[in-house]
Length: 218
View 1 (tube, helix red, strand yellow):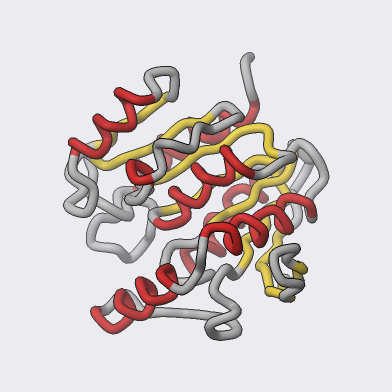
View 2 (cartoon, rainbow, N blue to C red):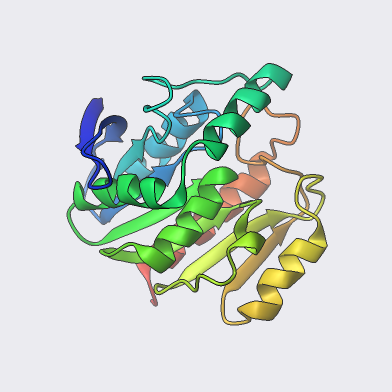
């Protein structure tokens, strides 16, 4: 379903896709979009977490630019998404994410994909009310290493990701050796069905690790 959130940054009302937990509730998960908006892929990820017992919410972080923002996977879509990222300052994004966190009952976790992976990293450092974070192929994370996560965090990267060189992954590992960094024999966007780099096995394993991470020590 579609719900609304109010950002403390500027009082803006943004939309969010929300799916209630199926079965016994384990917590809530904020699912952060790629640059393409709250796409079918993001909604599918929300459904996956709901099926695992989590209330899932995906805020539409580019609603100020275009209500219900959506960009295609072609060159024009990439350009539109990159422009949206450039027009969305971090304090604004973090306030929007905080509104999503606040909309869920504890415990609350966060995950994100590509751009969303970097957003999840920064939220783990700046936002309150989070219990853990899991970032998927966050291309901008190595530019945010001065911001240390304050909650347990794991990261997932494709070893054949043309958008994220292994040198960038190594930067993260060197700065934060305590963070679990998982590599998969896959490219970028390996959890996005329909992507040339989609890898069902890698996505399933990364999702399994994320759910185990959110569940905490056995």
